[in-house]
Length: 298
Image (tube, rainbow, N blue to C red; front, side):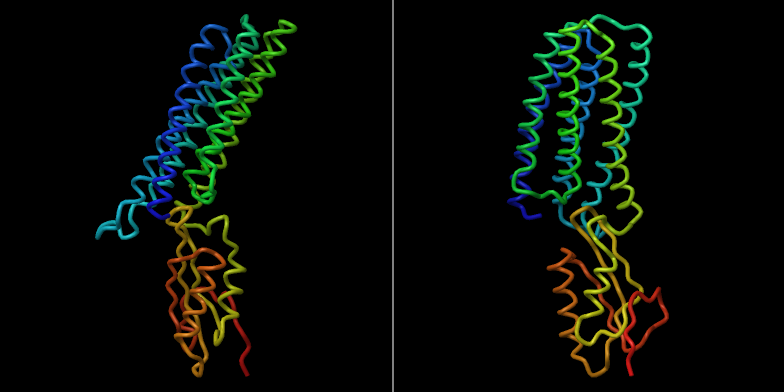
């Protein structure tokens, strides 16, 4: 990501954090005033949004630091650490909300429906604006930015649920609706937690990034001029936007090796966004690694 893009994203994160703090203050005060567990649950979710935004902003800052002798890839991997921390904290808070919702199912408590409706509507409007600020001009493949947007959109959906509960309580006085929406919010948080943990775990285990299809990569390499075989292929991500590839490629002796190498790298860069590719050209199979593609040569 270029320096200009990083600066733009940082400013958007700063604005998003300021707006999120306003939601947090309003919902904490509102949960105390209205007695709503759903609003308190949403406030907890908003706090995690703020935590996610702060971690993501820090990850973007630290990932821009230059590589060193000790950290030859720089600090891009911190993005994965931040996303993993977000996922774990989301899961913990969702569990706490479920426990409190169960208690209120057993002993419903009075809630001020109209006041709850006004505060939840404020939260929804601000959350949607924050999501708009963060998602402008793309950068959607960045795991930190994607996780932050996921947090904010999840909280917007939770605010919709709180609004629905507020209308029911205001019009009917059925306080159990507050606990039902709290369970809905906790399930929503668990879903977000699972997605973040899955994506970050794949990167930590150096698995193939979700946006890459290995068979398509093999096809593009094996159909390059002069390529006979592809083996010992590895694809992994330092972070969500920094994909690395290494492979051994058997080429015909009469082919232009430099032209073949340039063609493979150009295809990997333009089709898959793989900038860092280490290709070892060979005249015959070296016996290392699994054969991914083999042409029959007469």
